[in-house]
Image 1 (tube, protein in one colour):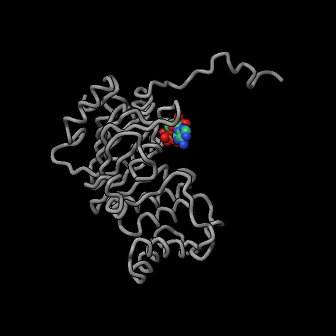
Image 2 (tube, rainbow, N blue to C red):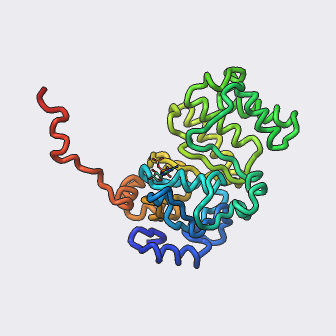
Length: 283
Ligand code: ATP
């Protein structure tokens, strides 16, 4: 089995990642993100338990895992939003914590629970982000117009962000993250709360973006989506990487990513047994 780490001990997985720079990849793959010995603890809760990971560049990479697996904590540390307790992170060849300016100029981030400047309109938000990124005003205008158009936000560009719907907020957040044409784009649950039409639009934009050689790393619970979008997947549970590799490698002999995932995270769906015997009973 190529790179399924489910049956391995944590030590095995750590040694494996340290020894092989091309874990899960075929041949000479460039690396977009390199994580070594990453740890984060909140009080007694270990959120990320010493992970090693190499994410290939130019791919659509999915980070999947059950609730509380440590995906958001990992993405927050990788994008420089949360300081790790231990470990090294390199993005696009630069250390996130010793070379933050270089890294931040090369990445775009759509975090979970994105906070936006609510009292700006969608267009103003993009203008602000573009100028903050050092782009010339006319270039910001051009890119903002195109992004608003493609993401179907042109009609709402002068509306205040506070009045945007959930899906519109995701889309304007995505536009802001893409405006400076980053090398690596990190998206935490980009499709959550997004209707199928908008999801299709977002998908189209991201597919075009990765075709140009850029990398998308996104977290999701929706296996069908990950299966249809991603070239490469890392499965996380309880703060550890359970499997990583191409979609085919992670899926292995399982009929779908969903069943491989359930097998890997050790949850065949908890049976309520008799514990909910009051539910749906005679009233
Ligand atoms: P979900 O899919 O539900 O969003 P996740 O995989 O993104 O989950 P995290 O949000 O990274 O998981 O959380 C991992 C663990 O760390 C959880 O047990 C969570 O309760 C804990 N945790 C995360 N952030 C904090 C925090 N700021 N303070 C305390 N505990 C935290």
